[in-house]
Image (spheres, rainbow, N blue to C red):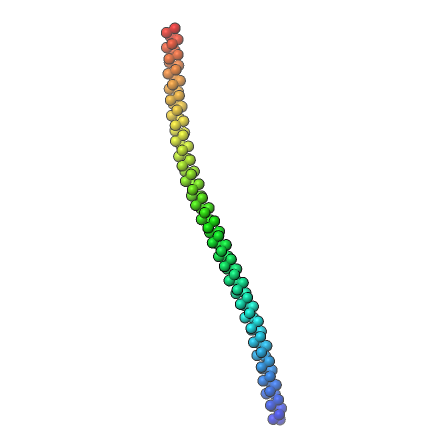
Length: 112
């Protein structure tokens, strides 16, 4: 009976040790997979940060270009307004000169 209990305890102890060894290797492999996944995730995040910075710079440049174009459009609108005013002023002057020419033509005809 004593040998049976010793054998039972020894067998249980060996099974426990084997179980712990298997469990250790399992958790070690899980930890290695997690480290690989973590490294891949860090790399992915770094690449994403680089892309975000790149697109942010492009956006800032585009917004700067939009500001420049807006300023140019504003100046061109003001220039167009000024040209329209000059054009209308020249039309008025042209009409005055045409009427003066007609008056002078009539005076010349009256003198003849």
